[in-house]
Length: 122
Ligand SMILES: [Zn+2]
Image (cartoon, rainbow, N blue to C red):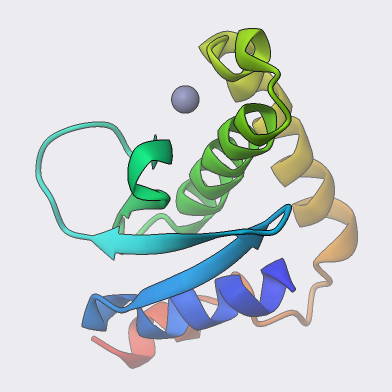
């Protein structure tokens, strides 16, 4: 489940862990890293990798970025290359998905965006 995956990411990202995310049967390596260059997220289909930059203080932005890269992967896997390559469309849609989940499916008591998760490991 994505939320459990995200919880694990937030808990463990300091350690530079690598995780697997199953998108429509393809298992992508989710690489959280501290690289200084490039985009906040990258979908690398040839390497079956989704790369996310670690923003320690902005987990909500990382969550939106994760959805952005997942949408690239979904459109790619479905052969919807026009959608996959339309950055503006992917950005709007991933922000909308992240918004709905943040504001409806993640309760006030959820640990998902609890500041303590970040602070515990510092
Ligand atoms: Zn993109």
